[in-house]
Image (cartoon, rainbow, N blue to C red; front, side, top):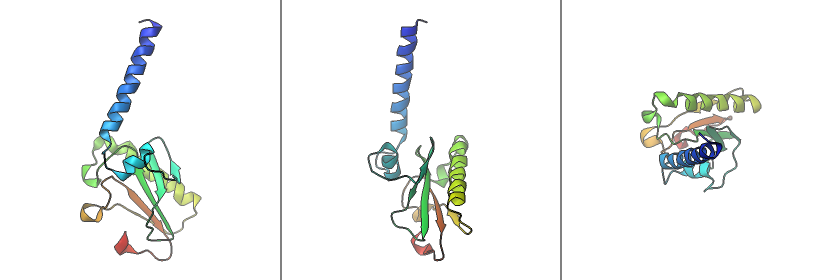
Amino acid sequence: MTREKMIKKIKFLAKEAKLRIQYKMAKDCIFCKIVKGEIKSAPVYQTDTVMAINDINPVAASHVLIFPKRHIDSVLTVKKGDGEALEDMFAVAQKLISERRLEAFRLAFNGGRYQHVPHLHMHLVAGSTIKWSQL
């Protein structure tokens, strides 16, 4: 294969990958829009696969949302191939806990009617008072 053909094929595969990623993301998902930059947000931390942002309606002194950049609906739709995203979510939580020197904290996943955003996300909450009914 010539160099030109190889470059053309790589460009095609890159374009195809981008289209597949866009297709996989839910059209009206607020977290997907944040990942794509359609909604401005200041990440407190991010990796290639995970983003962490401060909750806009915090229920505690420290309230961070940690979610995979790739759309996963909820804990009910997690499948075998999602292991890396889950591992990365916990790694980001560990990093934030360490950086913020949190001695007491909770990690929570909401589901069903308690899940307000249909994109898998973890709440990292810490502080003296946590308003659980608002989580």
